[in-house]
Image (cartoon, rainbow, N blue to C red; front, side, top):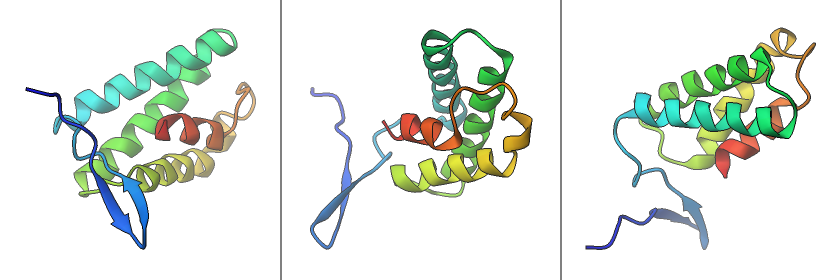
Length: 108
């Protein structure tokens, strides 16, 4: 049996990637996402606590979006960015990236 493939919603000839194929355990997926974000930032720059903090924000945003029934990647990415921007003063001093860098990483 082949593994599940991501599904897409077609909107006026544009296919929107969906998260339907991911595990329904949103906490598990969000933890995996946070670990990936932290690893990426630590590898790209230097290990810093701010990377963990930004990853935790993305984790919470992901869980919120998925628990509210969101399945479109771009909507989840936007929520991640909005939440980071709303609290950016907590990260700005030490971060080498911005909220959109993290949001784009999430969408990848």
